[in-house]
Amino acid sequence: MWLGLVLIGFLVGILVLSTGGGGAAIYLGLLTSVLGLAPAVAASTSLFTAFPSLVVGAYGHYQTGQIHFRVGNQMLLTAIPATIVGALLAPYIPGKLYTWLVAFILMGLGLQILIKRFLSHNDRPAPHQRAQAAIYGALSGIMVGVAGLSGGGPIIAGLLVLGLDMLPAAATSAYVLVGTSLVGLLFHLSANNIDWSVGLSLMIGAVLGALCAPRLLMHIDPQKLNQYVKPFMGLLLIVMGLRMIV
Figure 1 (tube, rainbow, N blue to C red):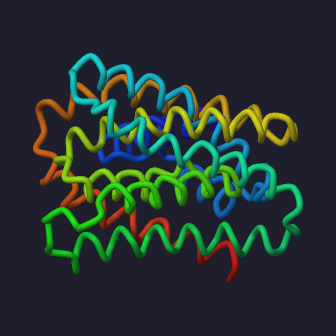
Figure 2: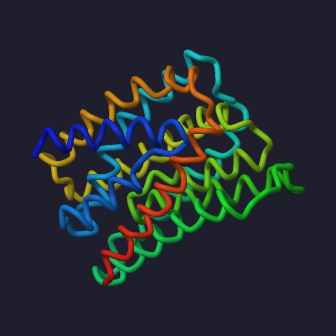
């Protein structure tokens, strides 16, 4: 079983870091809908799994010179406080409500990915870019703190709103997610909810995938990658969310 988890972690690590995410949403869906972990345990384990690969991936992007630190720091100003608020609220959310909340977040992220892929054709930066990016950062922080997601969806969306191309947006997103995931992980660690055996296996694979992702991106057209990978990820998240409540 551990070899299968390592392989899954490797594939998710490559895919999500190539598209600007952290992978915790995928891990969360796998841990809850496939492995049957309780939502609170899955939330902590998903952050534990995703964080090291985010650090490795962000460093790889830093070496390729793709991170826009000024924009990333602006988003962190709203994302980190929101992560703290979300983590403080999480222990007081009833178990059943927690399950529904995580399920709806997973399905919402999946729909967001599909809508952006198939229905959105406007690539021009929107007005009030910085205010919108701040909102995306805060939403990402709430997702990290409450549900144990890495929050990559709102972050990558906000960076694209600011006018970044896909490759620097993916790199800057990884940098921002290192900060929010660290804060969320520290809060979730205090609850001692991590499934260490499952988390370590996924983490090893995710780190190996993260080592490969930044260099692979330099040789792959990100638009072609997104054309096929993002719809698959969107559908996968929706199915995972439905499995939790059906």
